[in-house]
Image (spheres, one colour):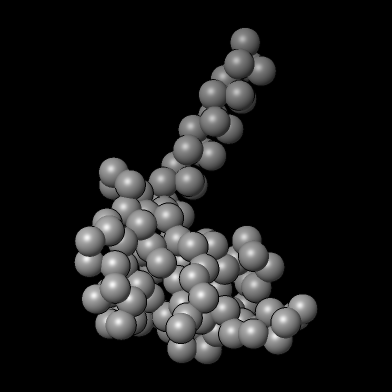
Length: 100
């Protein structure tokens, strides 16, 4: 019986953690950058709206954001600064997009 309670408790913790990490657009970006392998940038970079991308994504259910101090990709030495955040239900999911 203790094993069943432990499994239920751990499942509940994972679900709550997932919902909290995707509850706002900025948290979704920070989560995405963290799991890309840049934890320092995920925790310290400032995130602002990116008006150019917002005008571009008006027809889609998404918004553009940019990082003020973005991480630099090791392979190409490119800045990982522009992100598209999509809203699905009440959760937000971020994707890196190449800036024009």
